[in-house]
Length: 287
Ligand SMILES: [Mg+2]
Image 1: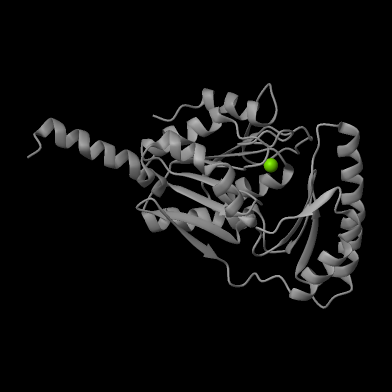
Image 2: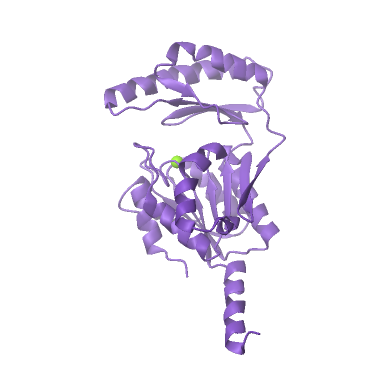
């Protein structure tokens, strides 16, 4: 039997878990990983682990495949957590919202948005046109709903520059393929720093935020406010969705490009990318 004091403590822990003061939503590339080395920043993962250990929800909203996140991020996180069941407070929203993984008793459960299926014709064409560039780029085979072509990367900055030029050429050809197809209404070609994606117009960080809110609802967790951390203007969409649904949201921005003024709170750091993220996290301590 719990005495009064213990039962009060128990209730307040439950209360905190159901109504945490805040919830973090992280982009992955450039936030959890360093954009140049692509290596995960252990300090960011430590923060995530600390929130999960206390039963506070955390979400990752990324264009990466869930397989990529499971390979590059999860082993470190699992080691820190020591108990896989704490993963029940984590949601991975991958491929810009179309594939997600949640955990039940520490076991991953994957969900794929059935409305998002890349037409085989586009995939075949894309694989064909990249053939001359395979020294510089690769086709991300782990993606299940979109086409992603990424630069190989290099320690040599001239080589990276060359790879990025190849990527631009590929993006132009992909745009033409999409425009000339019967799918031009539904598909977009998105060129970023290190990759070019062919995706459905409905895919994006907005879709991720909707999934995150649906997942929280299912778990009956109601954070008082949200902090979305991202490094590119497209991450703003994630924060926008929380704002439009009348939630209190702050966008932590650690990218280098100028960000237009937003109707919600924004927060920046003295450093960019994963280091800036650590700075923001050190300032905002969940309790
Ligand atoms: Mg990013």
